[in-house]
Length: 271
Image 1: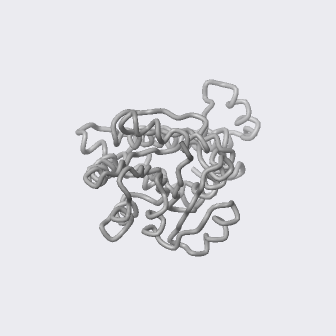
Image 2: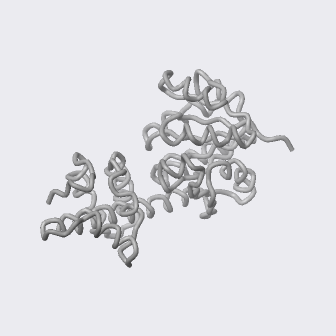
Image 3: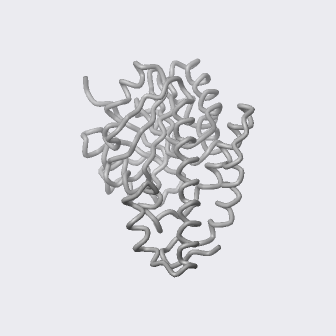
């Protein structure tokens, strides 16, 4: 069986390296972005440029969606967007971080047209996207997941089938909850240590060999917190819908808002 033509909607920080990995794996790749200035970045990686999502839909049999959050995804999959141009049997994999209910509703609408829409969130960040070593959570019917697996394998070294559509979003929410909590704990621990005269970079290196080791600490200074508030808003909405209290989530969202303006360099620890 010949390799599918893969469409990528969204050629931003994550989409661009994914496009490059897909091309190197031998896939025919076509991409589009709301910003036409991204065209050069797409074509320089060996992919073709589609002027609109509708044009992309006419060519691709597997489509990776790398847009923003719920509003952007719903607009893309609206009757005025990508969905009407999709052929029966097309797989649309949502890599965006959204509420599980959003992808479930869109999956039902797509199914009525003979299209398989699943969620396939990724973790480990931009550095892993560059290296092709992302962790991919993928949710959906097993047969659809298996069809999608070779595409995901172009940029992910680990692929975890989480269950029914929507569960990959739950897995990503859990990942984000822990990640942002660790970042805040790291900040407070290093701020406290600095106030008591400890060399925080030496301490950070030591902590990476201890029980305090975590991803955010390994990559300290690299995280801009650009997505923290949106990530935690999704977790809060999920908790409210489920009827459970997650007090740390509420606190961490407030703390993320306060810390976001700061640049996380090793010599900057405000309290």
